Image (cartoon, rainbow, N blue to C red; front, side, top):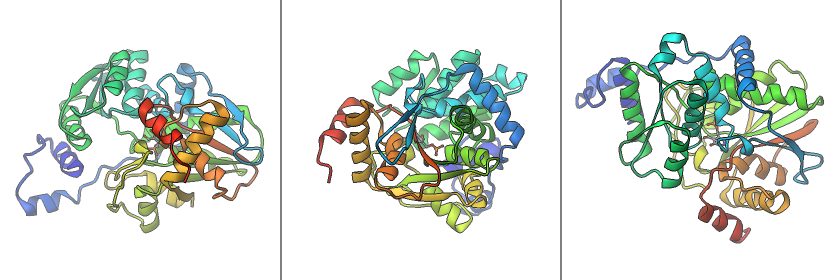
Length: 349
Ligand SMILES: Cc1ncc(COP(=O)(O)O)c(C=O)c1O
């Protein structure tokens, strides 16, 4: 579905009009979007843009591991770090593209980031969400003033529609397979430079891999920093692609870490960055994610969504070889309260 829409976009056809002819589709399927890896100049420019809109997030001590620190990205104004990439992507737009506006497909953290960044920078944003998107998320998007379009029954259908809208002139901003989004996520690293001066092991969630790729590129300029990526066991698209050197379709199971779940765009740059820098990747189970959410609520009074808790889960379980001081990124708080209560109130098993 996603691939079909991307191919339509490149050929400037409405989605659905490549359809039917298997030879045509097979030929088209070999086309992939080429997204360049951000340069050091891109990273620095993104860090400056993010700094001009957002305060640094706190770095606090935890008992999760010996001397470990938590970086509280859950306290961003949109409830997740994703706003960093959105700000960087919009800041990098040339004037004509600013005027044409941006489009994204996401009822989640990326959509909120785009809506917020667009509101702050005076750029029109259209966020396409499936008709099934939760009312709480839709309300949050409305608060930031995005032009909301409800389309399709699921995320794939919303994304297809967003890509078609973008083909008419607006810039499509992917949640992870985007040079400037990746650069924007790296701004966490530049913030850490100012908050702590020690050898570090930075532990980060991995969904589409934009955050881990950004941090990996930042860490490449620091001999005493190591990055470890943490996926949900239920959804390991990025580590699978990094391992075999190309995107592969993986099974995606149900997970509390909904922000990490799903396959990635064919030819995505994120696993390429992670593989070329040998970034370590591990995975945590659903029980381990619940355990970390419960720990963060009980020990730190934090409401953290499943995706935001996986780095802490890995630390709590001592699944990571820590060199220097561990910093776990607590990346988001956007979770419906009943889901949260269920996750932290249930058995730890
Ligand atoms: C809270 C949270 N943490 C981590 C991630 C993973 O980010 P990335 O897709 O850049 O790997 C996401 C993705 O949506 C997220 O919502």
